[in-house]
Image (cartoon, rainbow, N blue to C red; front, side):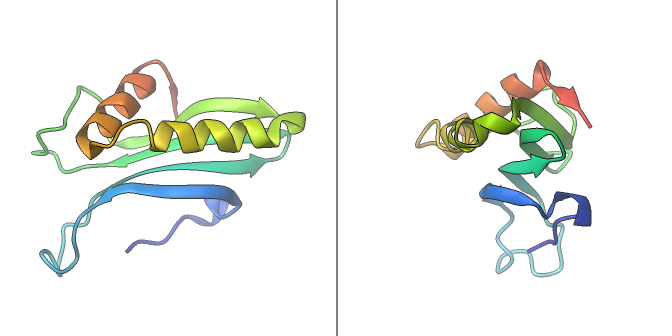
Amino acid sequence: MHSISESKKNHLWRKVVWFTDPNEHPLGPHHSVEVYCSEESNGYAVWYVRKLGKDDPRGGGIDNGDYLLHYFPKTARDDAIERAVLIANSDPSTDRIIANLDALAAAAQRV
C-alpha cells in the first residue's frame, strides 16, 4: 500500500479501516483511512489519518490530514491502545466508522 512516514513508525497498534483496492485501481489514486496508537516522547497518542478522494461521498466536511484524537500520559499505555482499538472497531459498517472518526476529528487537533 503506502509507507508510513519515519516519524510515525513507532506505532504500537494500527488498523487500516479502509483503502483503495489496488486490484481495481493499480495505477492509483490510492486513498485510505487508518487509526493508530503511537508512543511519543512523553506519552501515547491516538491518531486518525484521513486520505480520501476529493469526490468521495464520505466527505463529512473534514479535510484530509492527520488528526490527533487523544493523548495519554506515559502511565496509560494500555488505555491508549484500547482507545485506538475501540475507535477503529466502533461499528460493523466502514462508512459509519469513517463518519465517527470525522466527528472526532472535527473536535481534534490537526497536525
